[in-house]
Image (cartoon, rainbow, N blue to C red):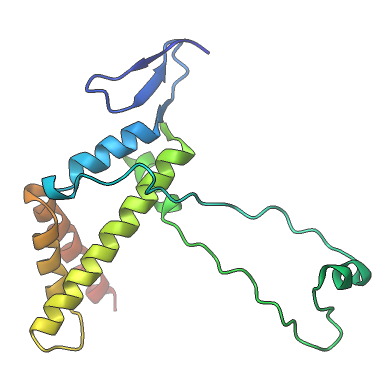
Length: 179
């Protein structure tokens, strides 16, 4: 590989000097982008607010004696008393697809992906909470697109809110016409 250099603006993107054809978005770059997108009052989030996503390894088949030793129920007509571990759902697949649409030559590190996933989860939780609060103020039990739109205007700064509302309106229109 070659030497790597920082992009102007110090947003944490590195590129190979040898012209390998791809770049990496680092965790620093993702955190800088998130900080830039958040309003000024929300920019003081700690470094430790990053949750890692762990993937399960390959499943290994074991004999019934080995399963009994480990405390697992054997499939002999009885249902297992142990629960399956709850699946961790993440937006990393969709973040990666959007990244490839916008910048096909960029790659993203796992730590940066984890930061972006936390950011998306945080913003969606805030949006849902604000929309729910607005519905309660109106004494409605259903959160409609109107409340979500108002919540987006309240949470997102300036032109970012305008773009988010227009994309949301476009998505709702596409959904209703396809029905």
